[in-house]
Length: 243
Ligand SMILES: C[S@@+](CC[C@H](N)C(=O)[O-])C[C@H]1O[C@@H](n2cnc3c(N)ncnc32)[C@H](O)[C@@H]1O
Image 1 (tube, helix red, strand yellow):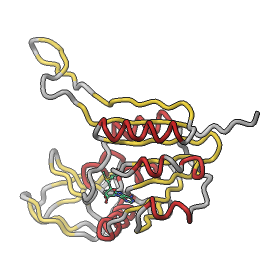
Image 2 (spheres, helix red, strand yellow):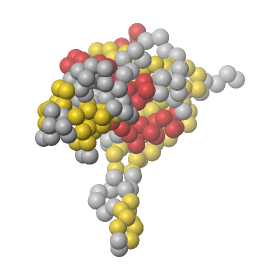
Image 3 (cartoon, protein in one colour):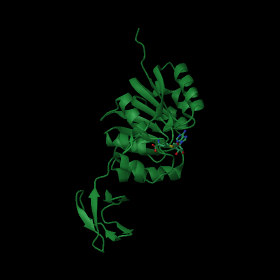
Image 4 (tube, protein in one colour):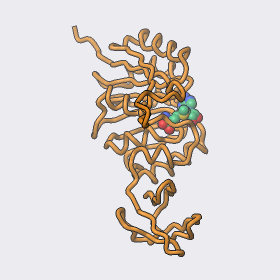
């Protein structure tokens, strides 16, 4: 759960102790969201339930996590929903997997770095989705032959994504979706080529750019800070023909 006071935010478990500049916080073992707890100096902090964006801000980071806005596009474009099965790689910090798990999606996710995989498993516990998200230590491209297939969604956030894209028809259920995130246009182009050669349908790449709006006394306009680019998302579907 999140323990908050203004800009001070701590991700804690019941029973944890946290030193703050306002004193020491001892979180009771039976603490519930909505409670106010005080430091030993009597300074109040609010206890909140962990929500999706808190995962991005507070999970222990390993591989660069996907940003909530990109995750929103994946969810919106694929319609992934409770009861669906998703195959994901690489797990990295596990932010995408945790978001999917919180939707009620059953996720099988591969992380080739054993230490990253251990951190991701702990992150899934923190996110409360360890029963839905199965973090497997290993390289997805080497595990492809062992997988049964029938996944509703295949999400890839790895440099070697094209190798898995080529196998998407073996992995996806009819009508299932592929979503590949890439920070670079070169690897995006390779994924599009792999999706075409695999015979996937409805191939579409979107660059994700968001402009924050500034409102002040002088007027309102998009923020002048940065272009807001995060990366490219390529979507495609497995639509086998029954002619
Ligand atoms: C950018 S991070 C993924 C972040 C993740 N989508 C998230 O939201 O937290 C990429 C991760 O993929 C892992 N990786 C790269 N290639 C892989 C592969 N073929 N199989 C499994 N993991 C891989 C890397 O070790 C790294 O941790």
